[in-house]
Image 1 (cartoon, one colour):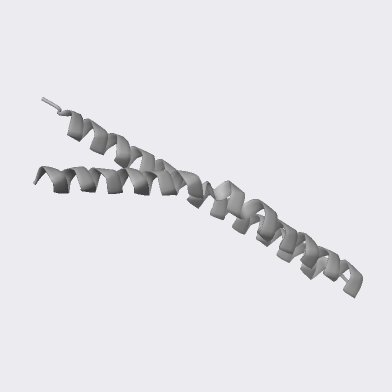
Image 2 (image 1 turned 90 degrees about the vertical axis):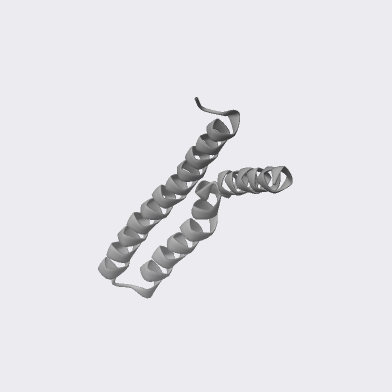
Amino acid sequence: MTTLTEIEAQYNDQNALDALITARKTLKSAMCELDRYISRLEGCTSPADKASVMNWALNHLACNITPNLRLDLIANAQAQYTRAAQIERSAA
């Protein structure tokens, strides 16, 4: 028979895995985008074009990665584990 504590532990584990997988997907996507900027930079002939590509890359790094990492999901999963640990300690 599965207890409520075991069900909550499974739920917490799934949430933590999902949060980390989301972050990994975001980082992999960002790496692919950086590869595109690298290719574009290598194809540039003028300093002005190179500056534009570097600006686009900086913008991507600054604006797109952190919001899409879903750090809130990672923090929520960590909080669930902390709550479970506190309950476990108080029961002991």
